[in-house]
Image (cartoon, rainbow, N blue to C red; front, top):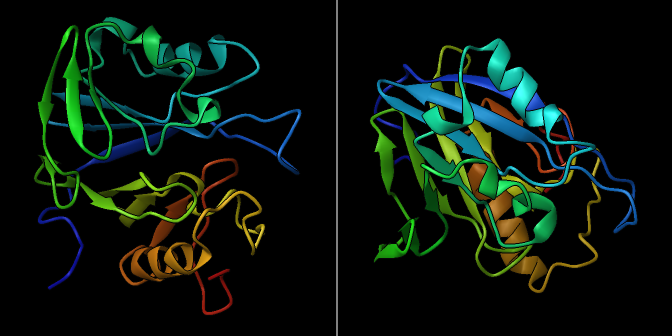
Length: 197
């Protein structure tokens, strides 16, 4: 059985490419947009230099914050979540529930399909609650992997990971299916045999 989504018709756009060179003090999240059918999804609306770093690229796509139907949080660190409130009409997804206004629905993220081309898998390691969004696209399977990788070049040993063995296992799981990886704080990259594991 493969983790790949069933279909390949999702559209994606990177809204803001993040950065970090250490655990602080300056950090910005890589924020992404996905669409399929009537679903408009933002992944990891975290810290950025200003909210326009998220809102202007969305506007350039003809999308307003109120049109975002879903927000996926790869994990609960503030640098990946701090701007989630920009999308007040959206359902929020994390590792164990869907939150809408003052209600939530318990569900395991593992294998949860937002659309036929967009699904969630559990990938713990950077934190205990990490999830990855897998999108079937024209570019192949794109993995929005949160902080499994901060950026293509590392760090190889995540200094804040509570479980490095689980981190490595989750990286291997993503590498087995992904044609493109979108890391938590850097530009997308195509994995190779020398990619950090």
